[in-house]
Length: 202
Image (cartoon, rainbow, N blue to C red; front, side):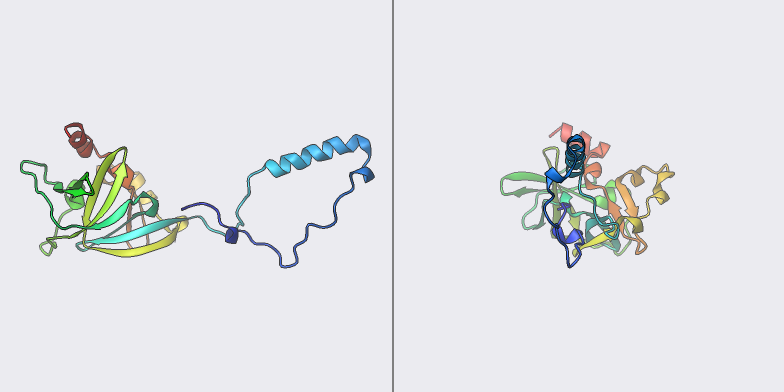
């Protein structure tokens, strides 16, 4: 998804490769050196035009009154849940388990996992799940609504707000935008110690 496209490069309208160079016109003692320099130039990686700002493709979603985002390439699919199974004696952050085309997917209550306080108006009965796969572990997150996807410049994502914070929850947050969109590191989240413990007993 983050591959380079031709549109990322600006080409002058009247671009020309010019006339072919006649090697014979160059003194013999310089021909080898020039050809070597040319091969070195051709071997260099292409560089994006400086005006093209680095960005992330971010998918946004609502979870109750909270807004989260994550890198779109981490998403496997969005699934509307029908039948679900609640497993007794499971930790509170395990909301349910579903069978997705023969694959068992553990559904996570994100707010519970990150110890984020739920308001009295917390919605119940979510039926949409974001499904991820990481290290052979299939997991989903119940959400209220998918907002959409967009590019967010890296320069607009503030990371220093969390770098000096000892709260373990900020380990799983890449940063926050000026619109107060919390961008999750989903793969790091799926390596949460609580989930690693859960996976070890599956």
